[in-house]
Length: 494
Image (cartoon, rainbow, N blue to C red):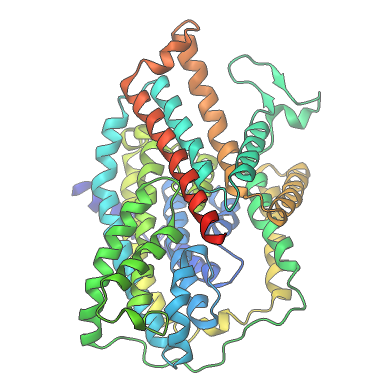
């Protein structure tokens, strides 16, 4: 308890709290704008984080993460276009409510449900993470290698519609990660005697190119097309007390469901929101009203997808395994600012963890305050012309790439991977598996090298640890589940 009070004192410090506020407010705006996601928002923040303390950087990233997940509901309700993938289920009842003239109440319910889901998931993160970190302190190189193998199996879950294309993308990421000087042997690999390639491709420009610049190229294809505009006046933001009592019985179970799903790597807010929506409809006394403007159809998915935020941070912080696409980018961001997720983070930098826990909790209440206070401002956000928005983002991408090493080469790397990311998206290759390969590949290689050096080249050491065998088993189950899910989806489409 004393540690959390210390974290509260740190976050509320006038020199730190504004960064949490900026993160949450910026996240809401980024999430509300269709085409921009939480991962893009986090990437746009990275160049500015190098000048901050690690704990301050982390609470700002957390604010962006939580704010963007909530922000996706705004465009889903107002213009039937989810700002983030996790808000896809919110469209089903959010937009019909908007058509009935109840857009304000729909946003109010989404805000309250998001806050409750975020608070519950944060409490679970606070209580679960330290226990899991203590267990992970028993890990050696063999266990960490098995853990990284499990992390790489997440590729199967974030591959999009095609597992084969996802695997190709993941292997391409592993290939990129192998460029440069090998840490263990000191030999240069695939550098072709080019000095800039001796250190490999810098991670920040790669992230900026694959997610932000490629997204700009994709959105440019929509230039000239007629976009949906929202002109309705917003009124009646808060639900009645009777409605709230009915909705809270939906919000709390959906929050726990979202938290549980968030803890499982390779799932994410989209899966959690649709599962929560289906369960709310199944147990409703009036299931036929879903899809026609039922407030529970907004509350359930919003509680669930914001519940995944704290849940997804549990494996990320304790094991270094991202739970979804956004936390994969978050993992890259943490490594770039010098914070290495894992059990030692809890032992060596407890002040950072305390600040994160408190910052994550305060972010939920900032979402509540900003969400309810800004309901009438949201339609104006959606009217920002693309001709203004995307040139600004494009300039920030190049500025961010240059600022890390003051290198024009890094700007060209960002542009190169922006083009690569554009063609990947155009032909159905997901970018997330490639990022997982770039981030987790070197970590797996490092732990494999350590294990073999300590065992004098005995490969059987990799399968002698019971913990490692458990992770290998979970990896097989993860891939099997992904294969069965994709087979089921193909059968439905057929």
